[in-house]
Length: 196
Ligand SMILES: [Zn+2]
Image (cartoon, rainbow, N blue to C red; front, side, top):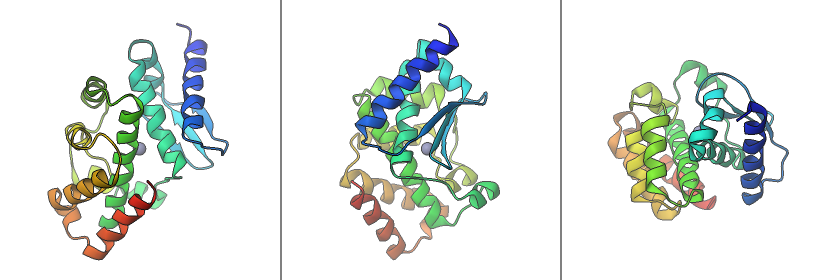
């Protein structure tokens, strides 16, 4: 299929889910870069990289997963602090908040794709590129595919239970997140619950 047509179809999907999420702001979708990721960034822009675009022919659910994931970030205006990005390091409470944002975007993408376990496993096993729960990955809120699959299978719908379970998991499983105060943890929990 011609690149122009692929991009047209992806753009169609983008608007479909943008409307579904009632996002009224103008969000610019662009195709740039050779990697397999995507980003929601400053000035309400979503950028999708080439490898993600090219999944559309054989694995459209992977491209859809990415689109929905980024639109969830856009809906909640979730930008990472550029200073922490540069450092590859954030305070533990910020890391927990980032981890919760990533899990919410992933869980909602899974929900929107019909809670299909095969799609979930394919995405996180064959496409997603965070392979380990290193301190640096965790600091920016990224957990590996296995952890994503586990958490999303446990709670395939993003609700109060999913939020509580995930916060408990992150703050007990990972030493770097264990030191966050009870008060801060409860604050993060209730922020996500209020956004349901
Ligand atoms: Zn994300």
